[in-house]
Image (cartoon, rainbow, N blue to C red):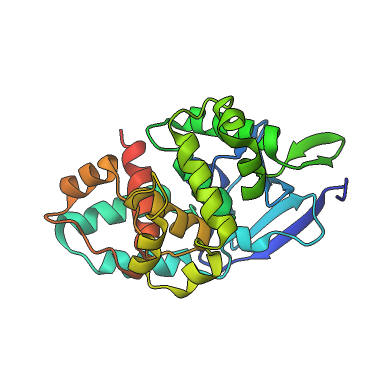
Length: 277
């Protein structure tokens, strides 16, 4: 592993804003923290650092890998165009809610995380809060992930399915994961056996892919949707929990069809309601 950080710059659609603070503070990713104006975290076995300042039309980040991790930031999509599309599909209070959510949340991008890490992270997220989820994910990574060194500091990749199977109920139980241990192990075994295959999920329609994931013990519609949205970039996927049901009932007469960019619309609505004062 290269021990020197390299700077990379990604060009975005000129109308797009990237807000690192909003993007990493909307409940979609659990391995990043902010300190002294820098957001730092591990992606696919590499270190990433990003200045907290918003940027227009580009993203600049430092990374410990020569290959770069541009796709992590979903650079191929115009979030400005997406926002115009789903806002214009509504009228009345639903449209107003979406307009307000976009105004507050614009700059959020849906991160293209590793599918396996996203699946396990959102299994861990069940009946959990964000600080504890982050601590659980970090503990699992430090105990069972592969170490690497960047600028003299040791970091850890997210553990492979095989590593978690080897850890077993005893090892994972020591990470204070509670009832989630059996769910994690079932997911790991299904991935290793090929029953859950990332390539197959990509090829399936959204409903079929969700049903496939829900065969994993403890994975319901919400966790499956999160794995598809954040792990496979299925931007049409809308994770719905009790919180989002309340948001929908507050602003829409019925559960809305948010369209092909529904996951992005949901993320804006979630962020807006979380910080609504």
